[in-house]
Structures are given as structure tokens and as C-alpha cells.
Length: 285
Image 1 (cartoon, rainbow, N blue to C red):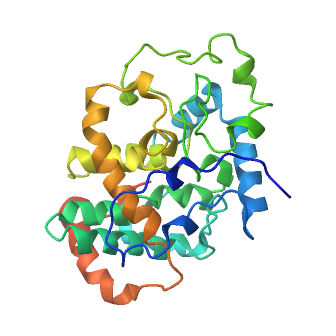
Image 2: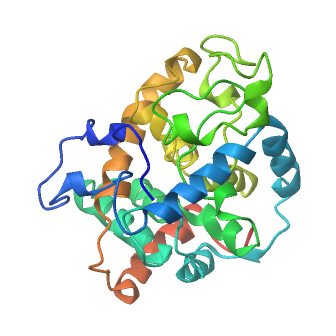
């Protein structure tokens, strides 16, 4: 299948990085060719058809009581051994390795910020939703606001939204949609997925991490904003202040992906110590 699509904006925005962290940045987030493209496009087509205001609100209600499972953070990491992200064109190995790769990349560059290391480990744990029976289009992939017209840096925006009922709505199909100018991303209804679920799970379980970690978890998949530069009309001063943290995190989320997998057993004691510090015990998921 050939998919006509503008180049992904993250190919233009490349934060300065140590060369050993990313040897070939241009090879990441390739949404125009590659062996996984059909799978990726299908996932986004479903996502952009069914992610609506009503759908997102129903998911908030369904998962807001966090009664799916009780387990520790490390048990959730182990669950991701069973998950391959169908929206990811870069990797075809289990997500648990990516969690440690991201965390270790951050740890190397920011050795004094242990909360940042832990955010790297935690950031994709919301993908356990896919193992709870949720379809991957409602769990993985780039996020975007619902309740307003998708902007042009949303992946496949011109070829996947035709059947989304919200875009037939006279309010939801405008640039601001149901929002006020500069209302703040905190007040925006994002497409449902692992970011929003994990952010809410962390709040529910009272993780003692700093605000920056919560913000990174909630918006790390919002590529149309932190990398594409869109949706500025919804941002407030807090969003602009937090944006550099999300962009710094993105270096390690994206460019540490490699089939050279880490020795997880050697890393576990260090990260278990961080879990015990910031989010110990058996948690509600």
C-alpha cells in the first residue's frame, strides 16, 4: 500500500543530542515507507475514525475507578513483555525493553534527576490497557485533542478522518471547537490512550513525583504539539513552561529505540529503588 502523507514534522525538529544517543535520527518515525507501514496506517485510520468526544468521555468513566487490576509498577513493566505497539514504525519488539532503553538514556544524560529516570520507565505503562482487551487504536499512537478540527501535523490527517462523526458537527469541526482560546491543555479533552490513562492512574495512586513528570507522562505522545508546533491556540503559560521538559524527554523516548536490548536483570535493582521512593507497593490500575 502506498500512503501519500506529508513528512512527519519530527523529521524537521531534531533536538541537539549526543551523537551516540542517536546515530541515524532520520530513520525514526518514517511514516512513508517501511515493512510496518500497513499495520501503522490501519491503526491510525481506526483511531481517527472512532476517537470522538463521546468515546473519550466514556473511556474516562470506564477506567476512572482503576479497578482493572492491582499490581506493582514492576509487574506492569513485565506485562509489557507481551505487547508490540502496532502504531510504531520503528520497532517490532516488546515494549518492556523500550521502557528501560528510555530510562537509561535519560539516566546517562541527567544523572542527578532520578525522578526523570523513573518517568522514562513509567511513560508507556498505560499500554497495559491493550492487554486488558482494549483495541490498540484506543491505547497507542500519537494523541490529539478531540472536540476541535485536527491540525495538519496530526499523522495522516488528510486521509484518515473522513468517517469521524465529530467532524460533521458545526462546533467540533472548527479550529477552536468546544474550547476557549488559551484555555490550557489541562482543560483539553485529549484522544484516549495510554498517556491519559497513566497520568490519571498516577494521580489516583498519589505518586510523589514532581509536576514535570506528570506532565511528561500526559503529553509525551502529543507530537502535533510538542514537535509539530500546532494547537498553540489552546496553550496557556503553564504549557509553554512545560514544553521544554516534554521535548527533552522526547529525545530519549524516540532516539533510544534499538534492537540492541538492555540487560534488564542488571537494571532492575536501581529502578526498584526509585519505585520504592516515588510509587511503592501494590497499586490500583
